[in-house]
Image 1 (cartoon, rainbow, N blue to C red):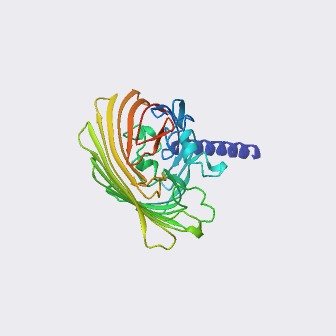
Image 2: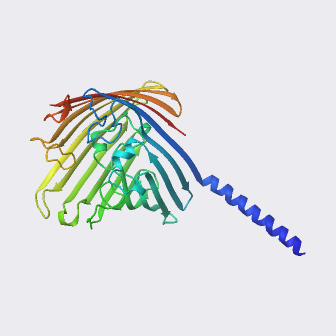
Image 3: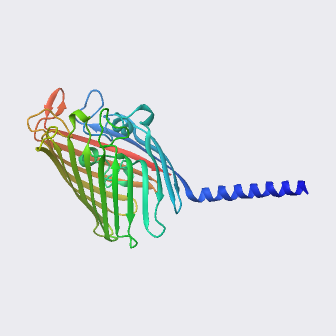
Length: 359
């Protein structure tokens, strides 16, 4: 009798473990992404590092890895979690201020659904930024390289957010409490909490309107300066072949602690894409970035960073999960802020190619 009970117990445990394993497989997904690139900058920087206001594809005349990413994600009706590790020049440049143990974390977050009847979640951890129309993953963007707006606003954030999705799928709203402006660990001496919001409206399948913000101080307590930032853009599927993004970012930061005067920066963008067929696409971008007081991009010149940008890229989808892209891009600035042959120039032109694969 005892032997029979033991056998039944072992069978029950084995069956339970099998059920648990099958259930886990249904809810866990693994993915990987890698993007290699080559950029030729006609200003030919001798140290192969390019502009200090660019954080992606920012190496000259060498084949390199922009972003390599592996991710595990869990999702069921009540819990979701993501863990992603990364490497590449994007990681080197964007995570330079973080502690060594944190530099290779792309995502590490857990979410819990807090309502039985409504789609309301609380997520905590390291997450992709709620700001902007471009992400760090190149294949998801209209253009090969990132806009000046994306490169100089957060790619990631750390904190907590509460999100609500409407039943009809047209509205999504989030409120966020954050460690700072693209931070995992806080700046030494900073005692402030930052806040943000995200509002998305999708009236139909062809239009997405997005409003997001950041409010906070990213300086040590003794140098506290409040920063206010708003990102507004619309994503439009004009026809089956044509799509466009129109965006405008604007920010203000106190000139000094407790000051009532502010330094302003702003950047308008227009992006367009034409999908010729299943394999070929072309896209372009026009942008302008005005930060004359050097809040985000410091130049040390009389007019600061007042720069026009333009780009054109051709994309070829080799397989459904492999894409080859080529882009020509240029900058023209009011001041001579670019260096060529040890001389300051007003312009900079470069060509970038990339090969991306994902699984």
